[in-house]
Image 1 (cartoon, helix red, strand yellow):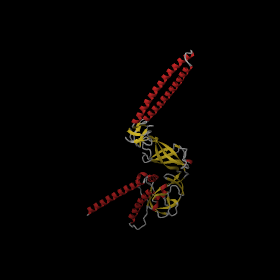
Image 2 (tube, helix red, strand yellow):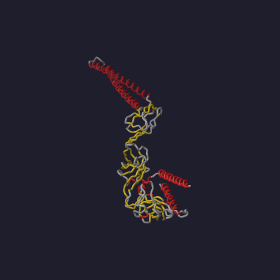
Image 3 (cartoon, helix red, strand yellow):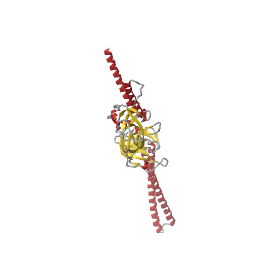
Image 4 (cartoon, helix red, strand yellow):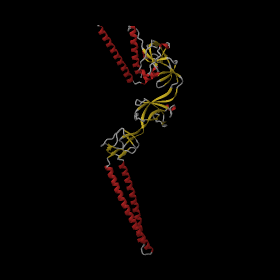
Length: 442
């Protein structure tokens, strides 16, 4: 931002100097620079904490296979909207299908053995009943009866064993069926597919990430809070989220929740902000700027942050304030939509005034030491030689200063370049017109 203001100050300086030389005709005279100035205000300053946030989709999950196999087919692409249960990838299932068939065959064998054991038990039980009846009539010996009883007990054990084998075979069939079903990877939630890492013929394992899946209609912005911030930041506070992809450049929301568990090493925690994202302009993984508003400062004189200047000789922080009468400065300040065009005043006396910064916001500082409604320099402070000096003033409104403070370096340089090119074209047209008139007079 300092580089931007310096570039604009340089443009103002040459503009002011060229005008002065044109009137005096003597380049050896002391050049008077041009600056931009704004009127200070009086009020309270919103207290904010500026943090970096990361966007994450709602119900965002990474999709991994549960088995190791080769991909046979991929059913979705990046950006596809899918529903819960929809097939995403099919893995080669020949081996798993064969295992499933073998398990089914083993189950059929176990069932047959169980039926055979039951039939054998019924046969032995009938024989035991007959021998018992004969023994009661003393037509069969005790030894014969004991032999049949032993056979009956053995048959009952065989039935229990066969029944256990059936249950074991059923469990194996269920396991093999589950493994076979895992060869088709399905969506656990509805959402949008991204980060595809699946191709036909690719060998995958449970450690291979295939997709990222999440719901982009609603996203959350995660920020990191230190233990110090927890003293004044809490859920429900107003936040402003800024990102270049947003249609308006900014969204207003509230802090949704704060995790109560801090990291044992960093002593920090995460806070989340839920945001409606119907146009999907915010994408998972994007960085955003998050301003959390947690209160207001005391009443003070307000100046733009760009008006603060650290005196290189004394190290004091202050502002350059006009000591001349206000009627010497034009009453038509430059607004944000005027692209910096505005009249310059006659030379005005400015003086460096040390101030105390009471509070500092995103674009504004609350200070003491300067009265409200004072003209303070926002662009061109480096052009003064010492703690006082004269400069021609281009008065601007606060909206123009905020516009400059919001600009990126490339934006301002492009704008200055366009203005210089337009000025050069106007100069060429003027010279060509003068040459034409001169040729006609000859």
